[in-house]
Image (cartoon, rainbow, N blue to C red; front, side, top):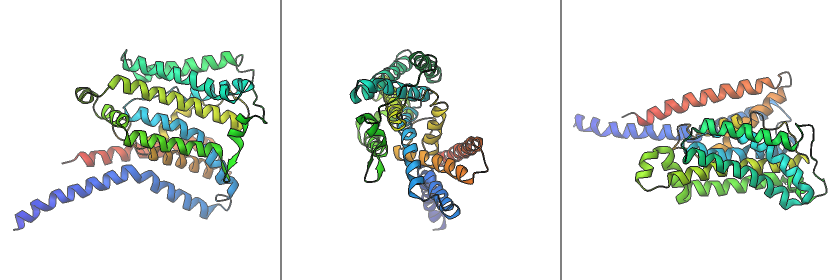
Length: 332
């Protein structure tokens, strides 16, 4: 009797540990976000004011769109270092194209940044080059195009504040900025694609085991090409929306944004090794980073360098926690 009970309890205990580890990976960032918001709201009177929350929401929207595309890439086991430069390029192209109408302002950055993402995917999937090298080269290429379009950065293109394109970035709907609504819609679409579509199944399969995915008939090359194209499109769209919000194409934006996007995705529970991740987790990761930055700004006595220090330390803790939780889930 005692032997039988022990034998039956061990699998149940192991199953419970696996469930707790999975919950930690999926919702750990959400718990941290809730705790940070509670602490900040109790510590700073201005944290929960409408203006502060609105500024955080709108500023988070642009990084969130970039992180959305990055999520697809990282779930496949890849990386995209070009998104920061594509974000800046998209903003400049949108501001330049706004003189010819809203349609050009939106389609031009999408076409150029999407094309660069497509080339990234082709080189990675067909030529089997390392994603790190390919996207690093694309980052330099995008910055080169940016400097060429802006005369080495000396020209800043402005957006007519009365144009529909400017209203797209500055208007509000039900008291919330239009970029926030657009970001919410994109995340809903991205979540459906990743969790409910055949394409999403292929993304997880490629990230989990590329060889096994190929043996099962998954279009590995096409999936990789698609996710890098999506990443380029998201970066270009985020840059265009940012240009509409600022009513100008600022050339110095996007520096380090690729690292912020990667941090947000990893903090949200997506594994850098691929095969595991959630769209909602990436959004939570973005919000958590923005709350941390806002808290540091609220303190006032700390300069912006502390934002990088805290974000880097937090990311290191998350990666260590993910590794530990992953080993617990794999443990017999």
